[in-house]
Amino acid sequence: MKRILSGITPSSQKGLHLGNFLGAVKPHIEFQDKGECFYFIANLHALNNVFDPANVRRNTQNIFTEYLAFGIDPEKTTFYIQSDIPQIPYLQTILNNTVTMAELKRMHAYKDKLQNDVAQDTINFGLFSYPVLMAADILLFKPDIIPVGEDQAQHVEIARDIAKTFNARYGEIFKIPDLYIKKETARVPGIYGDRKMSKSLGNDIPIFGTEEEVKKQIMAIKTDPARIHPTDPGNPDKNITFTYFDLLEYDKNKLESMKELYRKGKIGDVEIKTTFFRFFLEYFADFRTKKTVLLKDKDQIHKLRLGGAQKAIKIAEKVLKDVAEAVGIL
Ligand code: TYM
Image (tube, rainbow, N blue to C red; front, side, top):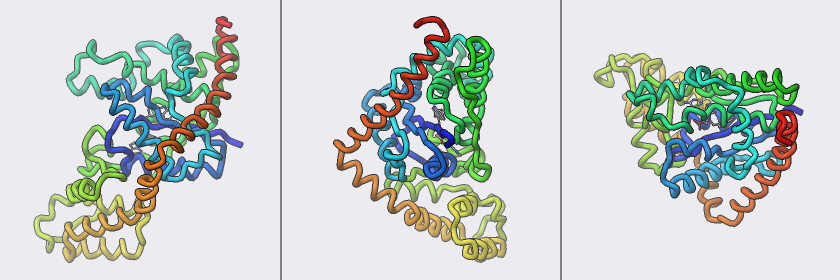
């Protein structure tokens, strides 16, 4: 049976967005029937940009609960919080010696930060060494497959390189995992259409936001700029709302006739967005209710957290012992 592993960083107070859902959570849930899954909330990763401890705590608990609401089954899946597994940062310290500064300087997250006019010397080391922590997250559990969105591909690649360097130096300890990216949902666009949907860009649709928050974002979706009046013919490819309808597998016939009306200038953008807003709320209604119910039982959430950590630590301890022996510290 294949082992599947993936994580998510709790860096937003708004919780999971549509891009996370389509690019990661949905495939993660589906993988539960196909393999032995390991999913976790990467709260140590969040520390490089969330500095308020109350927010770190709240965001972590929030996303943990949202994943459960989506159908992570802690009986089948090893579901944990990264900081509960001390073997992960321990392994990171060891892996630091298998990667060069030059390799880390090529990472997108670092380069993006530099592009935002931040002086190189002021970027915190947590962000710089983030890919090594991610490599530790991955390699410690010897997974076969890492399902992620396209933006994480480079991080999985460097984890593979780190594993190869380590194995060449110390013997075959780590498995070299395969990257899995679902083509159709590899890069869900943000509501302004120009960049990927991202919690930090403000272009996301939060799945568990209030109805007002969801509506505000949906109403701000970019539409065909050449269309000034609702009676002007429009190009559906230039209205991201249609992309979202498609990705959420809205009824094909209804979608096609809406696109046809759009082409002919017989339907307004507001009507399309209102239809999408209603569909969005309906699509996620059960998950939203489930989250509210789960949040009421803090003891149960805590129990699940402990149980997940115990399961993960059992495996992590064993692999770390092999690593420690291989490098000569045991
Ligand atoms: P994060 O928290 O930024 O995103 C979580 C997952 O959601 C995917 N994703 C998207 N997919 C498609 N379209 C989008 N617009 C979009 N936005 C986000 C991401 O690709 C990701 O799969 N470093 C990781 C978390 C992590 C991890 C790991 C993942 C830590 N350790 C080990 C895999 C294995 C991150 O910050 O993802």
